[in-house]
Image (tube, rainbow, N blue to C red; front, side, top):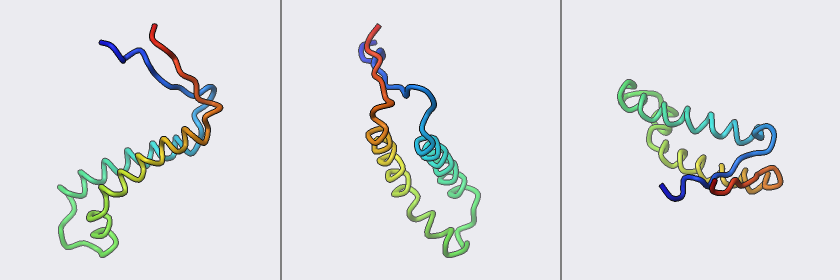
Length: 82
């Protein structure tokens, strides 16, 4: 399929901020679904705030990942179509 040959990759190790954001993104995704089905609706105020704002947190984490790629752009390479 056209378009699947393009990809960006980091030269060397993945930067720590990118790895941390990726872990937080997966954790937030898990907590969004687990919190909706397994946590009772009458919980602590902080947990209730998280449940109300988890989608916003998800999009902020997603927006921060390209920002990290731009900051570390000297370590990013592009692999064209093969």
